[in-house]
Amino acid sequence: MNPYKITADFEQALCDYTGAKYAVCVNSCTAALQLCVEWCDGRAWKTIAKPITVISIPKHTYVSVPMAIINAGCSVAWRDEKWRGAYQLKHFPIWDAARRFTYGMYKDGFQCISFASSKILGMEQGGAILHSNDDADIWFRAMRFDGRTEGTMPHSATVQNIGHHCIMLPSVAAQGLLRLHHLPRQNDDMPDYPYPDLSTFPVFSEENQMKRFK
Image 1 (tube, one colour):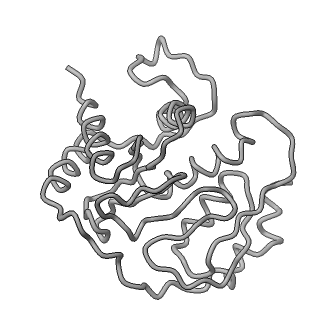
Image 2 (cartoon, rainbow, N blue to C red):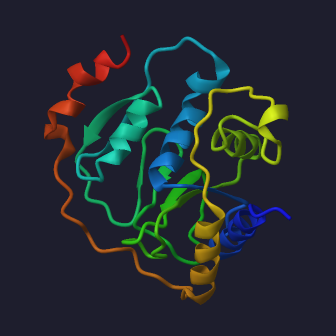
Image 3 (tube, rainbow, N blue to C red):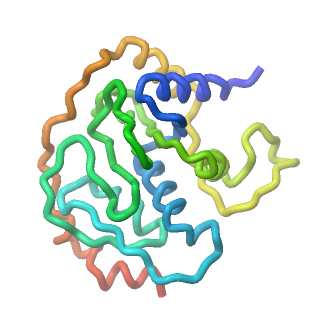
């Protein structure tokens, strides 16, 4: 008996609902964004030397988004953009769609969604990556599970990358499956939220960002 099968069931339900080929559940939208940035940047898994990637995001967004970018080894540039529902982490094909969740929403690239209690699906926690990349899917599933192959026991696990511990618990997946079953097909984007201008936060200054990479 595998209690984590309920997570796979929830992921398949998300695919059926959103139209994505794959859905990779994690413990937050922030974790989903960081994994996507690490995959697209390549530095964390290709072991390559390259200049630090600069990713542009709106000045007004949730504070964990630039933190996820910086923790993934990239730096943040700010742009003036009024957005609703979702926006792109330019110039990667990554979208922060934490404030959007509706039937058939998946288009392309990597869309990161949130299941936090204040969001549309309204669970206690959780997030997911909606995508269609076969290679990335294998990598995401190992990286969310400490770099291990899912289904292996710790004493026999082979670890190929420095991973993260950000799996979705079966109890959360079960709650999501139940809520998704009763969710309408059409859900409007969440209304605008008065996020602060993060470009004014000293912690995100260019000087402080560069300290991370010395």
